[in-house]
Amino acid sequence: MTFDYDDQNIFAKILRGEIPNQTVYESDHALAFKDINPQATHHVLVIPKGPYMSLDHFAIEAPTEEQAGFMAAVGEVCKLLELDSGFRAICNTRIHGVQEVPHFHMHIVGGEQLGQMLP
Ligand code: AMP
Image (cartoon, rainbow, N blue to C red):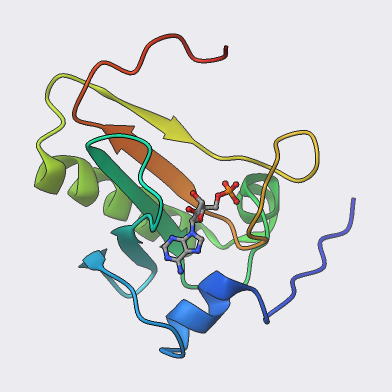
């Protein structure tokens, strides 16, 4: 598998400041912002600042420092949203995972009972 990142995707444009976003948290390695079409009380997307198209691309090719920075940002978002009762983290990937935006992102969804994982 080779990974071919397209820097014209909407999250790349958000990272370049070309499109506004509702930032929840930002660090050197990651940005977290509210999903424009929330599926629950809390719905935040956490993205790395580097050019990775998917979870497997990020896990295979991102330097350890970027991976650690991303996971630290996930932790900060969980703290900020006070997700003590739990949440769901989702990384839709390519065709079978129905990934719409080809920049790696983790959905953090919570704030209410979410039901079963798959319908
Ligand atoms: P996925 O199917 O995992 O690629 O989901 C992409 C997500 O990005 C969807 O939940 C969209 O609602 C969300 N989204 C698309 N454009 C924006 C935007 N400009 N700001 C925030 N969220 C967005």
